[in-house]
Length: 320
Image (cartoon, rainbow, N blue to C red; front, side, top):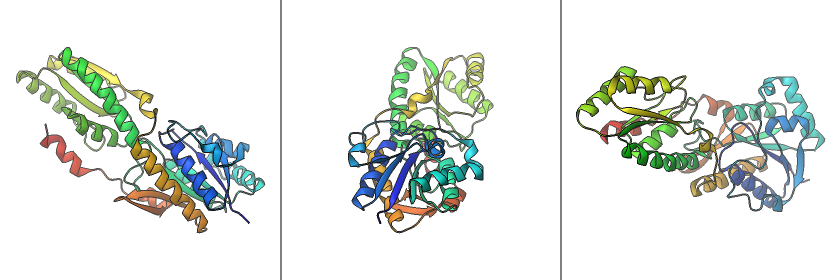
């Protein structure tokens, strides 16, 4: 009897999720599986928003941003009774396995379902790049390129008006978007959770640059460093002599057609998820480490220390 496999996306959307859905569905069908789409993440799962599809259902989605399956957050999925509803829905549709595309919360849901008899594989889909078991997550590269495009435009105005611009980027607790974009942009200062800079040091640096005749300043900062980045902005204007502006890029960073790198990553990881399911495995997540597709137990993956890219942090001071 053919395996019946579902696929869902959960948590924040990320460019490349559709490419991953396509890879899972196409690889599943090629392996003789019946494939099902689960809409609106774990919420849709407990509500039975599950539909059998063929390969044509994922045609023409590889270049689309967001997720055709839509996404929803369901904090209540931590409750075992809620998860039992999900298991009941999967059994109703005779689904043997589930591919869950998302971040660490999605992974935990997948692991808990695996412990309840449903073989689940996690695929890392998040712009933040905060999954330690993979060098890169699906969506990170596209988001990074969006930040670069936006910051290039901000730089034009910053230079024209001899300003200090503080560009706030996403990332939650992970500073990779700020770090990588800051190095790619050659900005004057990068402030992340892994590379914090005190207000005193920021002000002293800007005063020194002002005295040296530096006309404009570009700073990239991770979200949540300050409850409100405008506080730093006001301090800069008051104490350094620079006219300053805060540019919060916001959710524009999530959108857009996925980059080639994200599409290829999604294809590799989606296909590997199906390989694991065909081997009868579950409770695992897939990733890319040193350009090799790998997999880990989800609990093990969530305990791994995140790469803080100390080799890149060194470049900040070296290339000023």
